[in-house]
Amino acid sequence: MEFHVDIGPQYEGEVVRKEDLFLEFGGPKVKCKFELATVKSPEEIEHEKVEVIGPDISDLEPYADDKGTGSYPIAILIDVAGAELDKDAEAIIERRIHMFTNMTEGWYHMNQRQDTWLRINKDCAKKGFNSLKELGEIYNLLYTSEMSIIEKIQTTIITDPEKVKELLPHALEVYAARDERARTLRDEDVDTFYGCVLCQSFAPTHISIITPDRIANCGAINWFDGRAAAKIDPDGPIFSIPKGDLIDPVKGEYTGANKVEAERSLGTYDRVYLYSAFEHPHTSCGCFEAIVFYIPEVDGFGVVHREFKGNTVVGDTFSHMAGETSGGKQVEGRLGTGLEQLRSPKFIQADGGRKRIVWVPKDIKERYKEAFQADGVYDKIATEEDVKDTDELLQFLEKVGHPWMTGEVELPG
Ligand code: SF4
Image 1 (cartoon, rainbow, N blue to C red):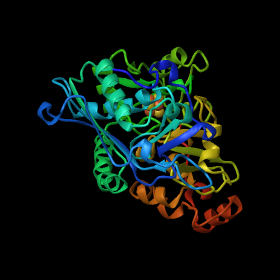
Image 2: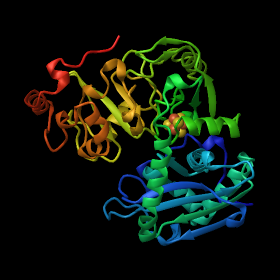
Image 3: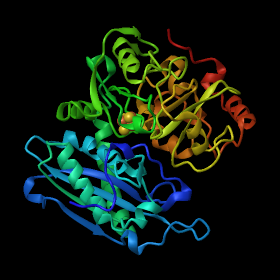
């Protein structure tokens, strides 16, 4: 099969910046976008079929900041079948969209699930890559050559805005069901954690350590997904980590996690705390769904997610903070995180957990209402509607009697 551009791991770290951008699908300017892999029965799949529904690359206006063109909705549907495949594999197959898009010269993929973001550069378009059908054919080829467990595949790429909008709720239900499944399992219930180095092409010292209490930073891979991935593709980017001994139950330091950190971070780090944002926090790549950030003025934490477009209470936007947090570093007081981690009882437990959260966007406060209510802090956390800066935050927290400020919260250990 001939393509207009080259394909290979050498393109994985390639970034498409604004200056080189031909056009983009998904991303922060587009409301409806998602990617979804589904395991189906063989009869439901027409092997190697690619269908594009909606305007194609050649039909769309290129990116022009002044005209407001160049950002479009997208849904990528990967349907697969195979004798050894079951539902457990779906999240893993879906996450490979990230890797396979980035292996394609001139293409750049960021984020996951309903946050997906694809960019094509001008050079790629100039070489004649003007149809999403070609991208679908590349997916079909890479999936079947890199994952032998996939026996049949068909790819559908939708750009029709109405159709993407119509199908998005189903995708959200699937993601929610995956997250729900992992909620009752705790780290002490298992002997094995999982590691993922898929993002090392952009963040060379980053390893996501995935445990029952810690969904991956991208929010797309939970412990069950890690287990499925390590089983179906033992030589792939997701691997098992024998948990080893528990060195510190409060900070979440395990010998197994430390060992893998030392081996896979190019020797940069040799310790990691899974339940703290200080000293040896988890590394942050660039795909995280949200950032947990320390606010020194009130000695508490804020959480901001990718969709929040305004200034946080410390005056920075998500993207500004992401620049300082990403790249695979351990940054004290900053954690790239999957949002589902907010539900875990071990979420920064060494630092006071959810009871030390003092500011979140309203959207997050509502989405995780139950978890905040369980800790008695739902009414005590400020949002962008309550305060504009840290001076106002301090006044707000004192007024509502936030338990962290009144000294009711005791640090464990
Ligand atoms: S964020 Fe972590 S788990 Fe998700 S793809 Fe990147 S390395 Fe893997």
